[in-house]
Each structure stands twice: as C-alpha cells, then as structure tokens.
Image (cartoon, rainbow, N blue to C red; front, side, top):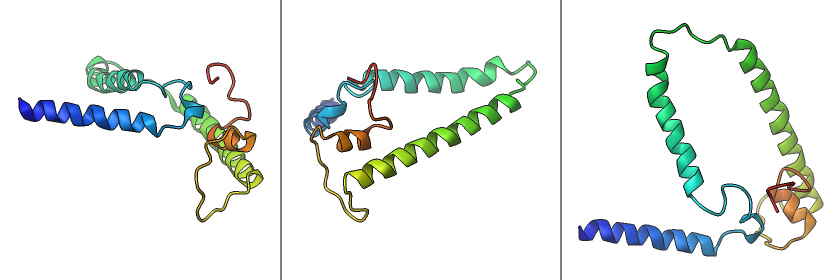
Length: 125
C-alpha cells in the first residue's frame, strides 16, 4: 500500500512540476490545461479497438477506399501547410536551425511558431 501511495505522490509531483514549466501562451488551448480530456479520448479509442472487431464480426467490411483517398490527400495538404508556416515563422523570427533557445514572449513570430496559423482563432485565446 505504501508503494502505491508513493507512486501516486510522485506522479502528482511530476504533474505539478510539468505545469510550472508549461508554456503559458498555450494553456488555454483545447486539451492543454487538463489531462482528463486526453485520457478520455485515449480510453474511448481503446474501447473502440476492443468493441469494433466484435461489432464487425458478422458484417460486410465498409467500402472506404474513396474516403481514405480524400482523407490522405487532405492530410498531405494540411501537413504541407504546417511545414510551410513553421519554416516561414522560424525564418521570420531569425531561428538558428542548429540550436535555438525557447522564447516564451508574446512576440507574433514566436506565437506563429507555436501555432499552425497566425491567429489561433476561436477556442485558442
């Protein structure tokens, strides 16, 4: 019992320490202020992995080829956009591509590096 209590205390101390070094600019972003939504999403995913094959056991497989083509193409476009924005923002901020210290200021170039868009938009403020 003492080992369990010690493990829980160490975990809580690690969590509190991680909160002290977190980037204050992103603490209001979705899934950033609390680990519970992320744990709920991960648990739901694991539940889906367990129940999905049972649900589909006696059913025809879904025809998702066209859906997956559209999804994969959109992911390529989205990731290209993220890479382009990151490169342009890092260049505008004068980043060194070998080693760069973290700047926690609200400088627009620094915020742009932390977000794939210039203005994080609704839900990100």
